[in-house]
Amino acid sequence: GENVEQHPSTLSVQEGDSAVIKCTYSDSASNYFPWYKQELGKRPQLIIDIRSNVGEKKDQRIAVTLNKTAKHFSLHITETQPEDSAVYFCAASGGGSQGNLIFGKGTKLSVKP
Amino acid sequence: NAGVTQTPKFQVLKTGQSMTLQCAQDMNHEYMSWYRQDPGMGLRLIHYSVGAGITDQGEVPNGYNVSRSTTEDFPLRLLSAAPSQTSVYFCASSPSARWGDEQFFGPGTRLTVL
Image (cartoon, rainbow over all chains, first blue to last red; front, side):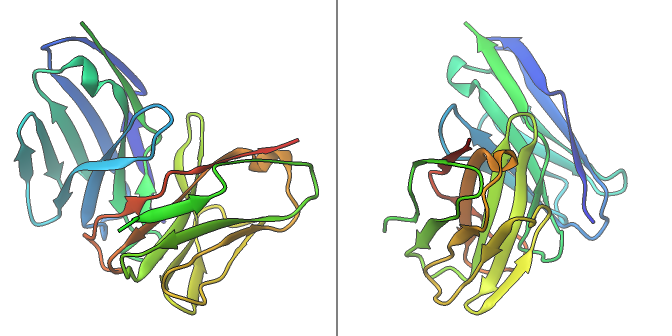
């Protein structure tokens, strides 16, 4: 089945710097890769996603890149702000149904003012 | 629309007790799922349903049962609670079981088993 590895587990940056979180997946049949942000005590919320027929997608300060050959995808946050501090999860579709998501273990991002 | 709702928000059980975590959505979504979230482990899929009357196992199904008698509701049953089931449980739904549909999460249920 699908397995998703996420690195780093913690990341601390200064306000205004960039942050990069990387994920690898194992199932070449996976074709949908969302990223979720979870603030303390809250539910996960989708911030950006990418489909297998696209190499890169941007939404303001957030971008995601996908390398299907190498089976890895990354989240890039530019000009970080304190409100970006949260836990970020990557996921890949698979695991019995294409509607299922297999999640990485998360990255705790801290943005210091 | 209320979106995805879960009850209760908090629950404390004793080992061996049973209970049902409720999940409902009012978006007419076909696909629903249950995850558990433990510190450092991310979200792990327990069970999922691609439509009313259809359920299947996810990554960590042992100790849990589900049913899907209506499109709106997807309850999760703990048959005999164990301390290892202490976790935060999230229900999620998406329009279909096809890849690429956004999954919407409920607010979660924090369960403690003593």
